[in-house]
Image (cartoon, rainbow, N blue to C red):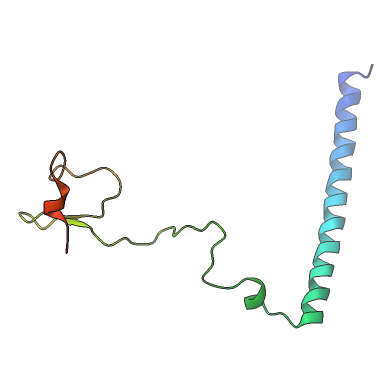
Length: 97
């Protein structure tokens, strides 16, 4: 059975091999992608079209208000915790038309 120190040395050697294999495979992948881009005349827009997000979310986008308090004019989008002025009340009366 191998000792702890021997196993650590094996782990370090494997880590180096993993990193070398990763760099080699990335280099091969980049070369292949460049070859395909040149062969088909692709542009960055073709490969990464704008308007699409990989997550499918609208991170940071503003949402228009859905409710308004007629007394104060405060608004609420309907997301997150409800403000005090609408809590426990029929929300239909506060809808913005």
